[in-house]
Image 1 (spheres, rainbow, N blue to C red):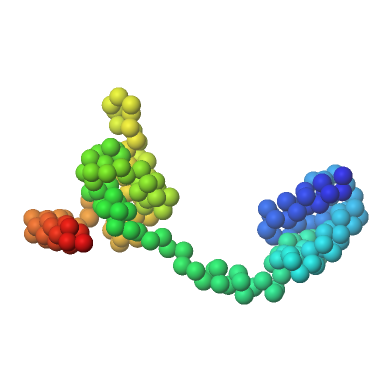
Image 2 (cartoon, one colour):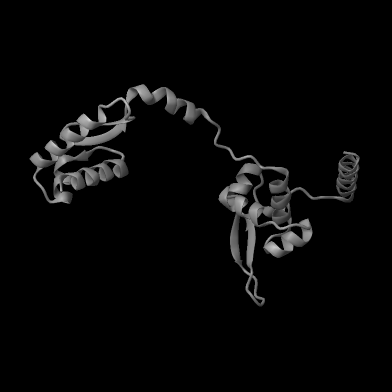
Length: 188
């Protein structure tokens, strides 16, 4: 039964993050505080092994699970890695369509792009740039998508109505770029 207590204590300390008073652990497990101390002491001994990256410390009548100092360098390497998501051309194209045509269904996005857009829309939802804003009142009731406040923050726009206007000269420029891209790909 003691190993079950170990698992429960481990779960409590991991989940709580901060220190947890011995009396609270004892009450949760319905055992004496002296038993909690004994079980935690055994856990601490097991965690001393160099193959483990965590330890349990005692802080003024409470226990806390924390990282061993020798692991800090590795943690810093992970923490320094950029967390910003990369918006590929496909994601930017899909996001642009949603931003300018919202609310819009996936099938409308696919009709404009000419390809399936499930992955791109799901990624944009995951990045919190796009969200479901309702359902269309037609058979099948397809989902409608629109941009989020995070989209507005990231792109420095205060409202979808203030997105840059795409004028005829920009459309012509886009057409020329697309034609050049097609020419380059056909020459490959």
